[in-house]
Image (cartoon, rainbow, N blue to C red; front, top):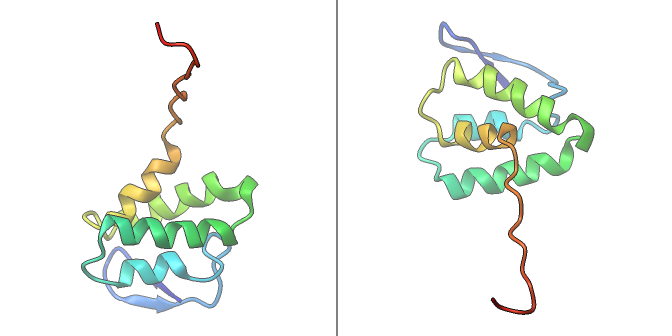
Length: 96
């Protein structure tokens, strides 16, 4: 797994507790990813992170990678974790 520095270049990192399998790091190394592909990678990453640490880990990764990759579609996917969920619309059996 690689850690990107704001000044450029990469440094090899053996372990990151916020990205245990290195999926997010590899996504940022890939060029021309679509938002749909980023969501797929994100879901795979979310399965490998403890659920109580998910929001905190996503926030850390968003802050870390936004310094060097301002236009990558994975940033939008990571930012969606911090947005509050909308309330589900109530469906009734009887229409008005």
